[in-house]
Length: 275
Ligand SMILES: Nc1ncnc2c1ncn2[C@@H]1O[C@H](COP(=O)(O)OP(=O)(O)O)[C@@H](O)[C@H]1O
Ligand SMILES: [Mg+2]
Image (cartoon, rainbow, N blue to C red; front, top):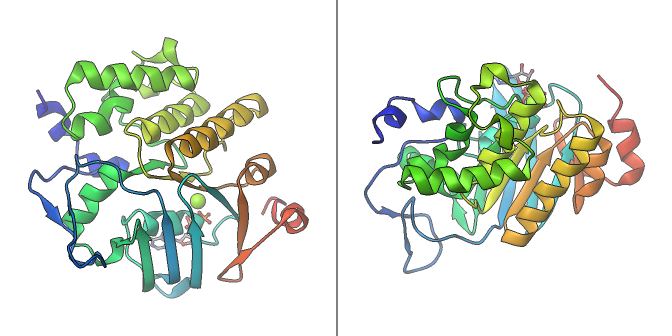
C-alpha cells in the first residue's frame, strides 16, 4: 500500500522517489563499476569535496571549498548566518548543483550523476537533518520517521518497528502517533534526526540539528549523532552555531569571506558570536 506515500511528493523533505531500475554509475572510477540500486548494500561512508564553488543569482557564496570526512568520522562547520552553510549541505546532498568542483561519496561523484540517479542515491545513502525539521504534516511522527524505509520498499510493519527504535533513541516514544502540528520545535527536530538515521545512511548531513533544543537535549542528541554514525561507519557533517556541538566533532572548519577554512578551538569563540 504505497499509494499514500507516492502521493506525498517526497522531494519536499529532500527524500526522493525510488526508481525501480538498476543504476549504473558511469562516473565511478572503477573500470568495472558496480551497479548501485536504491536498495543495494551500503557504500563506504567517505565524503570528499574538491574545489567546490557555490553561486546564487548575482553572488558567489563559496570558492575553492575542499573537505574530507572519513568513514566513521565527523566534521563540524561553523559560520555566521547567511554565509552559505545550508546551501553547501544542499549541494553535497545533490539537491542543488555546484558552479564548479566535485562532491564524491565512496568515490562516486554525485555531481556527475543524472538527477534521477542522484535522487535515488540520496534516498538510499544519505540522511539529512533539516534546519527546521521539515516533517510532512499529513503523516504522524512515526510515519514520517518510517518514510525513507517505506520509499525504499520496506513493508509497513518492519519500517515502523525500525522507526520506533529510532524514536526511542531520541526520546519520542510517547509522541509517535502525533502529527507534527502537535509537536514542539525541539520535538520536530529530534524527529528529523530519527528520520535521518533510520535507514542506516553512509553519509549524514545535519543542518543546525540542535538549534531548537535545550542544553540537556543538545548533549544527548549530538552524542547520538556522533556515536551512531561512528558505530555505523558513516561520515557525519554538522553545520552548527553551538560550541558544544562544534567541539564534539572530530574536526572543525569555518566559512568566512566565501572561503571554507580549517578552524580550531581558538577560532571557535569568535565565530560563535551571534550575527
Ligand atoms: N535558492 C536561492 N536563491 C537565492 N538566494 C538564495 C537561495 N538559497 C539561499 N540564498 C541566499 O544565499 C545566502 C546563503 O544562504 P544559506 O545557505 O541559507 O546560509 P546559512 O545557512 O549559512 O545561513 C543567503 O543570503 C540566502 O538568502
Ligand atoms: Mg542555514
